[in-house]
Length: 408
Image 1 (cartoon, one colour):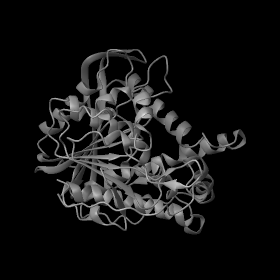
Image 2 (cartoon, rainbow, N blue to C red; image 1 turned 90 degrees about the horizontal axis):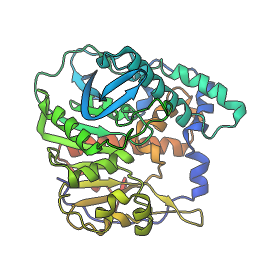
Image 3 (cartoon, rainbow, N blue to C red; image 1 turned 60 degrees about the horizontal axis):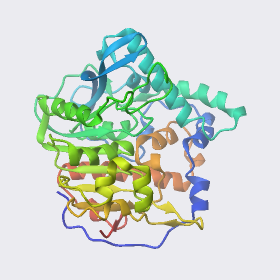
């Protein structure tokens, strides 16, 4: 799937201090956002050129009998919430971003209300408030509420595709939601592809403001993933010969683990958007991620799927940027890896829509620094790269002006 690539290296292009000055977390971006009202257009796409199709969106709920789930008076099978983006000839957009928080397919009002509120609170707390002084948090959180009304270029109620289309199955990271990469999902749908994303975290009555990947000791996420994949391949508009797995952070880790232990693997490639293991030593990885010991120690036996591992520059102890070592992956000799670093320094959440979406939700262009623009351009490159790999075209991945390849 990903052949013909060669390794290269470059010197560290920018100091960490400069990066931190300009590529700070979402908490600082909101100060720019407050200055200018949000525009009623998807400016958060930046320079991404949409495809010829409108963008349809729908949701569904899979009920997982692997575990009993309790929340807001509900007790029963665990719901796996699934969002689906797809191309449509009739959709013209107009849906509000906050509609992504609603799950009418649940058909359980109390459960939907609590799940929606849990997602809303996590978005507000984790994306806006962490880096702000207390004197500014209340104003930032209030402004966050207004972002849920910003239009996105998707709409509901559109006719589903009448033919089989190439498909991406996306898994988000810890403490996140299935629409955290909505720009990528919308973009791919506009280009004629289907994207399926599942809500892999669940709040509980004990922790209603936290999103837990395993809400009870009996949960088995690999079984959940198999059910998600079987649902995906059962749809009349997904092409089982053109199926790719994409994951960010914990979601990427899940795909790697599933590729070793899962029994149903219809996808033909994996794109990992920063697992977070890439920068750590082997010893640190064994300590932090014992569930991936098989991989770290080079004992994988079934992980044969071609995998692109994307990771950002990391900071060394002298506050300069350096290339990640990918140590956790270099003992695994059976998986055909491509270890890749964007030439533009990026933050962890720069690989998904969050930082890029909020950065371009309304600030004037003169308020945005050049490095923030560069990160958004790098994110756009990743969206285009994912589509090119979906189309079996690895030429972009070989572009050394955009990507650095780390030797195995």
